[in-house]
Amino acid sequence: MAGGKKSQKEFKKIQKMKESQDKIQNKIRKVKNDKKTQVLSAFITFEDKAQRDAVYAYYQRSPFTRCCFAICCCGFSDDPNSFAGSYLSVHDAPDPSSIKWTNMDAGNFEKTLRRLVSWMITIALWAASKMIFRRYLNSKRFCLYGIRKKSTGRYSSASST
Image (cartoon, rainbow, N blue to C red; front, top):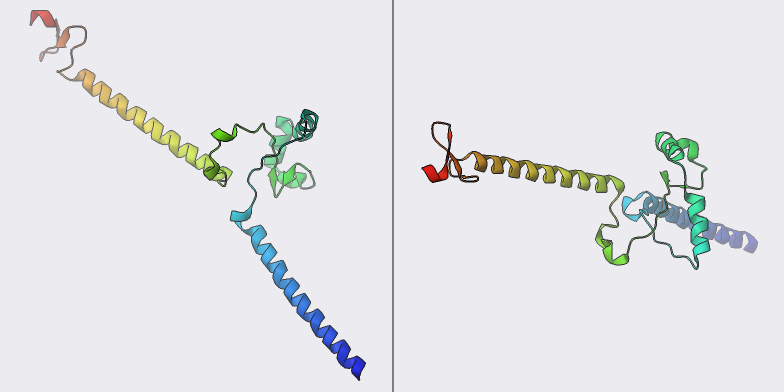
């Protein structure tokens, strides 16, 4: 009987451990699926230039390969250059003083959207300034090289008026 009670206690301990393991696995899944915890970029340093060159050679792919990956990434699921459904790209790191560290967590979609909005605002400001300048040129108060537009629509020299 003592052996039976002991085995029941062990069995209950194992059950509790499995339940806590399941809870931990659920938490891990939640963290993995959370957009805030996903890796967007990384900075890696190397001991010497040979290591850096080896990594560059390994991760550099032709435009054709990148295009194929973009069209059908499912064919590259076993490719070591893919990570979490995205294609890894390797570039020289910029100077640390020029990095906007607060923007490092922005994804590609957000960065593209920001650039698009920035370009739209730039074009709108350019068009508005061009319209204002044209109105100024066409106004009666503007005098270019001493020539003014008369109310009749003809031009005359500013010195003859």
